[in-house]
Image 1 (cartoon, rainbow, N blue to C red):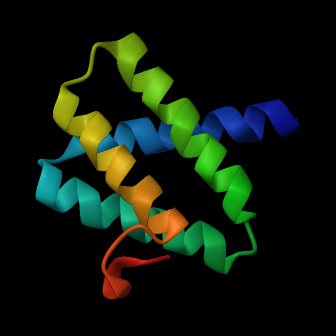
Image 2 (cartoon, rainbow, N blue to C red):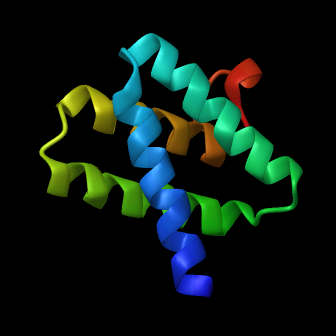
Length: 87
């Protein structure tokens, strides 16, 4: 069951990263990450989910813009961003 949950989050992240243009996808993904953190989802686990999502995107042949979106939210998770975007 744990493995299924991990795949669900990384798949969802990949889906959200490709569903909209970069500017909107970035805010959508950031909101998704913030909501998971608000429910008590562990930050380090969420970071790993985003890392797995990069592999999902690569496997799908997604545009580079989608991976950039995921990488930007990973930066928000680690605090490597403007103060108002940190998670």
